[in-house]
Image (cartoon, rainbow, N blue to C red):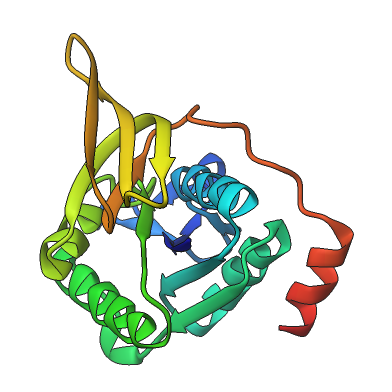
Length: 204
């Protein structure tokens, strides 16, 4: 089982300030964290790794300092980390971001087939919820959004069954792998980083 988890480094929302003139987020001096919804996705991928074996690859598009977010993800137990960074990416909208991430996943697939792509339901800085679906569309993958629980993954039959939060209730959906899943808050409880993984992340 090979899962790719798309993460983003975002400003800590508890310390965010908005520019009084431009109404844009002021990132200078604000601590950066992994987008909280992405951590739920990472935990789901790690649980599948615990159950089936395989690998978890982290993928992030961002400036060079986003390497810190990837190292943090490695400290939880991910196996590999890929940072795609270029000054040309500055100011990218969701269309450009989904294109870049999908292109990177295609390259990752050349080394090892990808069974699942995970992403948080949205980022706390953009709040568009468009990147995950955009990546799925570009890769031709089935898309499962707002997933609140993964009921079952059958590695042999390459099938997944999930519960999806919907207006007025919960939908139970199944589809074939590979697919892309966006996760809701509360789908799991995120594990602690281990000392051995922290040392490995520092050397990675």
